[in-house]
Amino acid sequence: MLISQIMTQDGKVRVAVRDGADAHFINDAKSVYALALEAIRGGIGLKEIIQTRGLGESVDIAAAYAEGRMLAPIRHPDPAHLHLTGTGLTHLGSASTRDAMHKKLDAAGEEQLTDSMKMFRMGLEGGKPSNGAVGVQPEWFYKGNGTMMVEPGKALSSPGFALDGGEEPEIAGIYLIGDDGTPFRIGFALSNEFSDHVTERINYLYLAHSKLRNASIGPEILVGDLPEDIRGMSRILRQGETLWEKPFLSGETNMSHTIGNLEHHHFKYDVFRQPGDVHVHMFGTATLSFADGVKVEEGDVFEIEATDFGLPLRNPLAVARDAGVVVVRAL
Image (cartoon, rainbow, N blue to C red; front, side, top):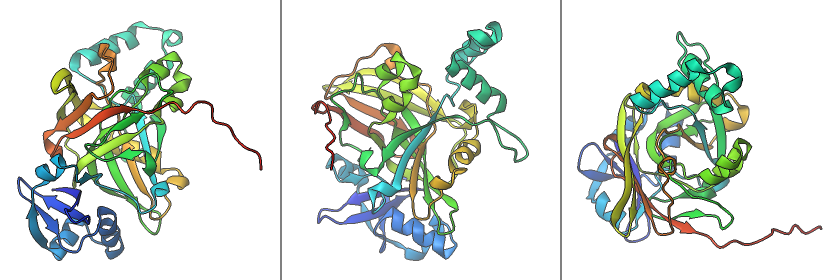
């Protein structure tokens, strides 16, 4: 089942659902946030509450997307209470990449390994614990709050001071915190964890700076379990032509961590279990155009797709004006 949010022709937000090709609006559903909160408080699941509400008129979600009326599939009434976060070094990549990394790890002494390689090895050895044990914690980063999230189809804005603005095709978990502090997973969505890879490459300690960028998710949320083997495509379009494209893999089959382990190490912090907050947590990738030497330009379009997640996620690149030095005034 896939759910999404659409702006109607008369300016109202409606929630749509589909299980196959045909989509319908859910009766009296004002937002995914409100629907999920009602389900939590009622002690039922999303599928059950949708069945209770019933379905209304059909909707052409592809046409709505083309007309710019597709919204981010989750929002919070107060953007400061939506958290964009993620993990890195969690994916194995292709079989050849996996073998190459294993060989490097086996051949190199501990002192020769970079921090990234050490983190990757830790995930290989302890990212998939058994019997309910806690696994090794992953690399973790913060991207911003709801003000940083961009609708599907809208531009990802690279700051004027940025050195790069590149795509990262990922799967994101979408969560809502219940009144008692329990995290509830609404589902999973495609995400573009847009980052500044040139800044990060200068020094790994610049990772935090490089991640404070826009992100986009959707257009649809997959409700239910995450497929274990996800095979998608990431591409860059320039003036309507494909500049670059490459398959990307996700799902636990292609990861060095379980989803449960990544979720534990995020939500183990009390600050991320505040009632009513929304979390969009991105699980990482092994596929980047930047790694292939691609330099994106303003107007290029990032496109990420995977069959299980419905419509592809598309966002053009924009570059903001550099505002110069920020001057702080004393009171």
